Image (cartoon, helix red, strand yellow):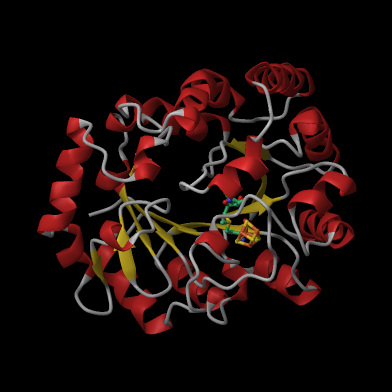
Length: 327
Ligand SMILES: C[S@@+](CC[C@H](N)C(=O)[O-])C[C@H]1O[C@@H](n2cnc3c(N)ncnc32)[C@H](O)[C@@H]1O
Ligand code: SF4
Ligand code: SF4
């Protein structure tokens, strides 16, 4: 059974971030029913749960009840958010058993933020971060998430300064993926030269060391050449994907109850089963899931997402745990 689950509590969202793959999947609005969540947790008994899907997790009417249920069972919890939440919701987060809150900010300046996080509210976000950190006790630990893209490569170091100033525990940089969409790739790094991105990452890495902000920039710099090569020719054999551990240690559950091996596998063909139709354990041990694992091991990537992916390896998970214990 999986060590951790990633759960989409809802696929609804009120932002339209330029890099987001959400609009590429024109799905009907859905919230994961609390009954399905309860059965899932009882059956899979994961060590930890990440609440993050193709929507804003805190727009689910049951988000806090789900956190409560996970908390009573001793499950470590993390959630991603755009952070544009009401004061009441922020207070509820501080009082909830949530262990880690990952706020997607993507920028340091208001200008870059407005270009990336369409419909976001920069001032409200900064206020929410400050209030949360001044009211919450030890938990949740707050992390900033940054998808590296053309609108922010000029301010990666400024993001680190922002994190230092606002007492953020960790800055987590992410490669942007196209999900096969030319629109997304254009928004992410269209027109950017490889030298510009490597220089920006190297500068940010040195700056993070200097001001002592924990990040995953080591992982990013190590994988940058392969990422670049893959993004320009995703048909290349996905040797990196062979080292993917995800199908053995976790599952992704969508708001409609579909189970896929990871949050980047969103096509119908990637669905291993549905928890409204059978138990999670039946899906996890089912024939389709087992065949998927064998294909990953043999490097026979069928999904374009796997082919362009730079999956984390065991050493990357361990490094994250060492620099950021609530990971
Ligand atoms: C899809 S969002 C869902 C949670 C929440 N709405 C948020 O923005 O954090 C989860 C994370 O995926 C990131 N993301 C969006 N589009 C992406 C892409 N094309 N490649 C990589 N990450 C992406 C977001 O910036 C965010 O940090
Ligand atoms: S807030 Fe999150 S889910 Fe919503 S558009 Fe932005 S990245 Fe996508
Ligand atoms: S998309 Fe990446 S992380 Fe997901 S299963 Fe494929 S190789 Fe693994």
